[in-house]
Image (cartoon, rainbow, N blue to C red; front, side, top):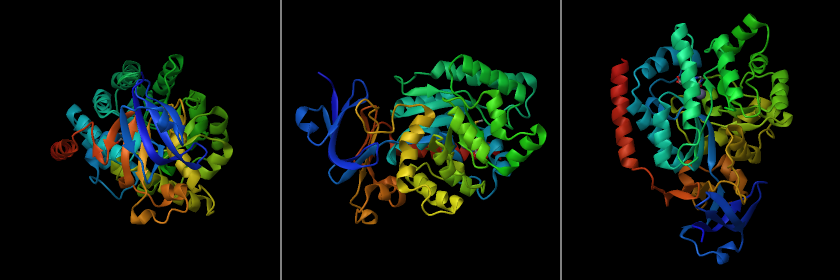
Length: 434
Ligand SMILES: CSC[C@H]1O[C@@H](n2cnc3c(O)ncnc32)[C@H](O)[C@@H]1O
Ligand SMILES: [Zn+2]
């Protein structure tokens, strides 16, 4: 007998963005969706049932680029562009981080994500064992990695940082019953020196470890690469071997047409972070052009210090809105494209078999309640997901067939304690940093 979870009585968002009345059955032993259909509930005697009456059952959202523990620095430094923000505020504060801070910040971020229907995320940070422990306890899915920065380090320290990222990628792959996967994560093309970047990427390729990095985020980052190397950043990344199909880069704001073709040709994915790009005034990524070229596009929040929340509903609305401004075309990045990017696109980008309600896919589900005034009337469910719904409309969240939030109560973490601990750790972190 299989151990099953039934999500009953709702409407289901299918991979082609159509919506139908259907029940969803998850096999909790395999963590996969076992059945989807209008009358499948009759065939099962489920171990657990979630009521989805008046709700839309959609794939759990996938936050394809974040620094989850940066929730501790939410609101710590605002209203600056990327470079001074990192150098004057964020990096000095992060230098004072203790492993317990990373655990507390990660738990806070994960609670926020579970509450807003996110079931998987990709994370680049430090003290990755603490992030993994938080993921394990919370029941979500994540691709994690240690972010490498070699600038301002001596040769020995720099090489050790690369080695640490590879070690982390080897050690934690498959942790938390397979819900954790890993990547080698050089921070960016300008913050990691060429020699070590090439060595690290080559080792990662040899061992089948994906690579995740920030790229083409600001004009200030692109210009020196072009001036020093006489080539565009993604041409350099390609030469280093960073545009393989399993690899994914965050931002891609200042990406020209040739670089878009290169991405499409090589198969590396782009994770669009519209809120962070707006807040740091980094620019507008050419997302519609990327979609037209066949590039895999996912969506991420980036860290909570440049967003300032981890709500993927905000993010997919921002993606749809700013996509129109960037393309100077109201038809660009339509609702369905944004929803696809935040689900199947993000899942493909980070390499998890989720992001779609389909038999055999991971049983990662968000059940969104549609009875709030801001969702009435409901002419079009997909339109509402992109332009009107909020994270707080999520009623239940399921990952790997396990209920993480039922009727807006997070079951796997003690929300009050998580928030209190994060407040305490953030206060002492900031004291230590000043
Ligand atoms: C070395 S771990 C990751 C590193 O990235 C920093 N970070 C946060 N947001 C951004 C961003 O938008 N671009 C580049 N780097 C960013 C974070 O503070 C960590 O130091
Ligand atoms: Zn980032």
